[in-house]
Length: 328
Image 1 (cartoon, rainbow, N blue to C red):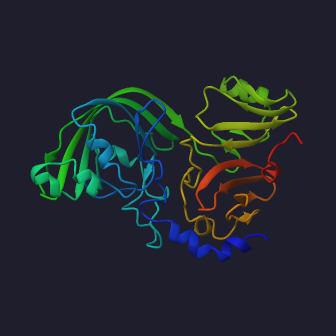
Image 2: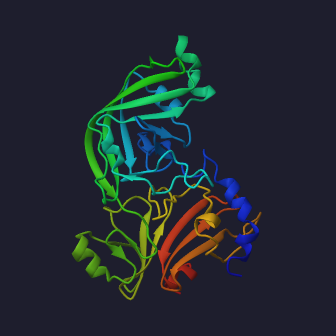
Image 3: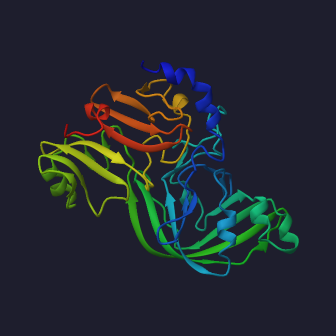
């Protein structure tokens, strides 16, 4: 059954990879503490003197906070593609591009298209602007070349909209005061950061100095996580060894190909058909589970998708990817 069902749906995968939804389902959302979060890791292209954002609209969320000081989290990645037009074949942005591009501007400027809802929050001549350009002033931070993704937490003062040099552009200044930073690794077919499938629980704790807590199962087999791990990440273990790494909502973790939960990427095109699909999606049926094997049976990534082909869960592992639970 390998790849057969996905090949039949290849066009459907590609059509779902639209500019607005392909790689930006969680662009500007409220977290449990009602903080604002902007994911600048994908759908951001470099355009000679500013960054161009092609993902889900965030202008309304920002404009609703003008004149206020709020908690803001910015997620950044080391590389920024050039105009997000990769091979001119589809519109999602992968990691190919310019490493450490954020350093090109001391005060990064990110521009994005406005929407009818965001324009309704503007007044006077700004009400007809079709683009919002945000200047991030102050302590903007980004990962150094070769470093993992970075989550930077700020107190952000949102300025008032101003007319830009072009009448179709409205300018907004966001002044940042850095509170803290947290590295965000990516989920690869065998690892998340320094934690890899096959590692013993004791070695994980010794090398990462991260205490692990059993959240289900028993001491010989079950599931662990750490309070120091990102939200949504846990690990299944068997005989005191990591058997599988799971990512469940809510989570900001992306795979090494840039895929995150809640998105509908063109997986068929991304993996060039090298996917094992284990279940069919449809009304009343179980979700699709599609596995990409880097090393068959040993290192792979599993994507679980709902009937609308949105990713609802991800996992990395070996043979364990064919099991729902290691403690059978």
